[in-house]
Length: 562
Length: 70
Image 1 (cartoon, one colour):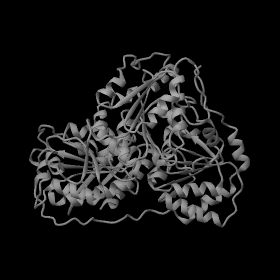
Image 2 (cartoon, chains in turn red, green):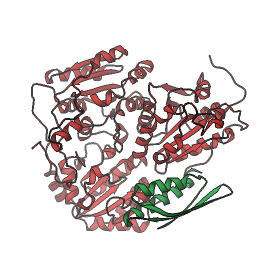
Image 3 (cartoon, chains in turn brown, orange):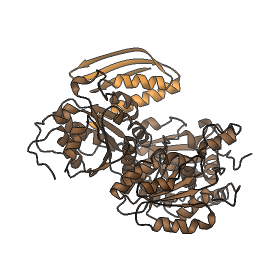
Image 4 (spheres, chains in turn yellow, purple):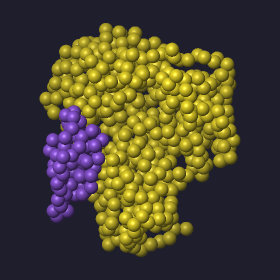
C-alpha cells in the first residue's frame, strides 16, 4: 500500500526527478545508506528492478540504455554497493553509453572518518565518469540530477555518478514543483571546408572504404550513414559497435573488421587509398600497430569528440561535429558533384574474402560456430542480441547481421566478462516484446548466475544461449597459440550442471551436445514464450578465426593453428 | 606545455594530473586558486610531444565538459 506524503524529502525528490527525466525503470540493490531512497520507492510509480549483485545493476542499466537509446539508471548503497558498480560504469565510459549511477553515501558528518560502508566513490570513479557529483545540500539535489542527465546524454554520451549522503536523502526540500532545467545542447558542426575537403578526396579516390562505429548509433546517424553508402556505393565495414549501422543485406558490407574481423574487411582497409571513418575510436583491436594501419590511404575521421582525432592514427581531414549532421552535410554536398564509380574496386574487395575459416577438429561433438550459425539463421530480424566477452562474442560479431545497431549489444571497449546476461535482462525492459537473446560463455555466465533470480522474479523473457566449452576459451586460445600450450587457469572442466542451476531458480532449461539435435533444440529455445536457458556443450578446442596476432598488421591474419 | 583549467569542480586539477601520468607526462609546476566558487589552475607539463598533444586535447575536453552540463 502506498504511503501518501505531503512534503518531499531528498529521496522523494530523486525519484520525482527521475520521472521528470523520462525514466521509468531503474536497476538497483538496497543497503544502509541508500535506505531512504528505497523507502521512497515503496509504492512509487517508478519501476525498480531488484538485481542480485550491484555489478548486474550497472550492466543491466547499460543494456537498457544501449537497446533504448535512453539513459540507463542504476542505484546502489555506499561502500561495497558503490564499488560493485565500478566495472559497469567503466564499461559505459568505454562504449559511450548514457548512464546515471546513484549511490548512497554515509551521513555528511561521517564522510572522511572511515565510517562503516564508507568509500570515496567519487574519487574512485573520477577517471571512469564524464562527471561525478557529491550532493551535500538537498536543495541542490534536483539541479544536480538534471545536470547529470544532460551530461550523460551528450554530446558524446557516457556515465555520470551522483553520490548522495543519507542525511541529504532524508532532509526536507524547500524546492517547489519540478521544472526540467535546461534544453538540448548546441552540437558542434563540421566546417564547410572540412566537408569540401572530404568530398574532394572522395572524387579523387579509386579504392575508398568506409568504417562506421558506435558513434553512429549514439548520434542516431544510421539513416544518414545508410544514405551515404547508397549514394557513394563504396565497400564498407564496421567496428563491433558499428554492426547494424549499414543497411541490412547490403552486398557492399564486408563484415566486421579488426583482430577477429572478416578477411575482406581487413584487406580492403589495408589496400584502400581513402578511409572514411565515422564515429570510431581507432581502437588497437581494429588498427593493429597504428603505423601499419591503412598505410596507403588518406584518412577522414568524423567524430563528435575532438580529442579522438589523431589519438592513435594520423588523420588527414577532421570532421568535428555531430555525426548525423556531418553525414547529412556530406549527402547534400554529394548532390552537386560527380563521384567516380567504385565497382571495380568493390569487385576486387569481394574477391578478398570467402567464408570464415573454422576449426573442424571434432565432427562428433557440437561446434560453437554451428550453434551460432543456427541461432542467427533462426532469429527474427528485429531481435536483440547481447553477448558476454570472449570467443562466443567474436564468433557472434562475425556472424550477426543486426537490422539496427541497437540490436547487437556487447561490451566492446572494456571487454567486461559478466556483462552479457544482465545486459540482456536490461535490454529486455527496452525491447517492447521483441526477442532478446543473451549469448554467454561458461566463464562469464558464472559471474552473473544469481541474476537468474531476477529473471524469475520479473518473468523477464530473456533467452540465454550458453556456449559451454569448459574453458575460458579466448585465453585458452591465446595460450595455445602464443604461450606454448601452457594452459594456466583456463580449464573449467569442473563446471556445474547449468541446467540444474537454472531450474533451481525456476528457469526452464535444456541441453544439447550434438549437431544432430541442434536444430530442434534451437527451435524449441526460440519458440519458448518465457525465459529459457539453452546449454550447448561444445567441444573445447575450437578457435576463433581469422585472428590477427598482437603487433601484426591487420592484413596479416592467421586462419589456423600452426 | 602549459595548461589552464577553469571549473566549478575543484577536483579537476587532480583529474588532469592523473591523466598526465597515465599518458607518460608529469607536471613540473602546479598553481591553483579559488575565487567565488570557480577554481582556476595553471599547470606546466613535460613529456613526449605526442603524449602532451593528447593531454592538451583531453584538457580541452574537460574544460568543455562543464559547459555541456551546466
